[in-house]
Structure formats: structure tokens, C-alpha cells
Image 1 (cartoon, rainbow, N blue to C red):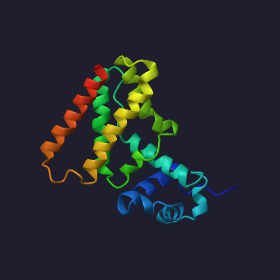
Image 2: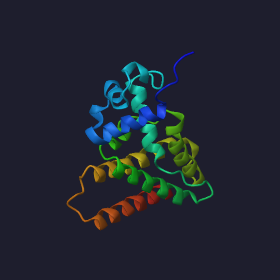
Image 3: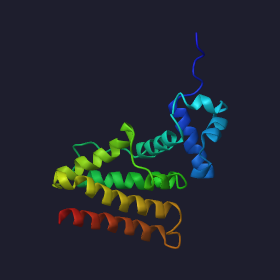
Image 4: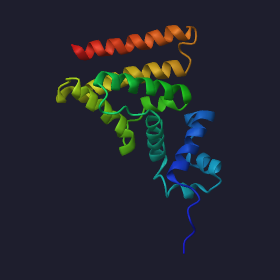
Length: 179
């Protein structure tokens, strides 16, 4: 009978996120994650195929921290809630969060956030042919703002100014969708 696993996919991803939070994304390697978990690097391969899968898992964890609003909430309020959730995630994980600007959401769990945005856009009247593009543009704007804030680009401004700027960004996005 084989030995019971000492780790799980969730523990591997949690260790990778802690490592990214503490030392930056460049520190996230299979060896470093294994060391954090006190296992051999080979033990990780039962849970993630390779470093790319590990990074895809981090995207999943980061996006999963953003609560999905219930579908009965009006579409524009869902988009606003998702944007606020992403911003909160960026604040909690400023060194790991930029990963969302460099890697797509490819795991089923990571795609749930994207799919929620797609559903809200469709409900808001965006034609099916334009939904993916609208999501890319909106996501890039919101992620870019969140990364800029979390990594200190706006540190010379009072928090009230940054909050007002974020509200204005969301207003602009609503106007763009209305046109």
C-alpha cells in the first residue's frame, strides 16, 4: 500500500503564494515551494505538472480570492463588485498580483471570474461578438489600476484621491459600455 500524500494541490499553491508574497514571483520555483513544504521537488509533480501549471494555479488562487457576486445582482453592480474584489486582492498580494497581467486564466476555477464578467457584459447588452474584447479591455484597465496602487505607483496621493480615481475609472468604463 502506498504512502498517503503529505501535501495537496491547495497546500502547494498556498506555499507558492506565501513565497511570492514574501520574496516576489521570481522566487517561486518548484524547488523553493518544495523546500517550504519540506518535501522533495518530485512530490509536487503529483499536484502540478510543472512551473507553468504552478503559476496558472497562482492565477487561480488570486482570482479565487475575489468573491463572485450573485447572478441576481444587477449586471453593473456585479462588475463593480468584481473590480473592487480584484483591487482588494491586489492590496493583499502586491508582489504576486502582477502575475495577473502576464498570464491568462486557464484553469476552470480561474475562468470563473472571467465568465462572471462575460455574463454581466452580455446582460448589460454587449453583443456576443464583442464580449471577449470588452472583458479584455475592462480587465486590463482594472488590473492595471490595482497593480499600480498595490505596488506603490500612487503612494504620493492620499488614499481618498486614489479611491476617487478608482471610482472615476469605473464610471468611465460604464460610459464606454453604454456607448
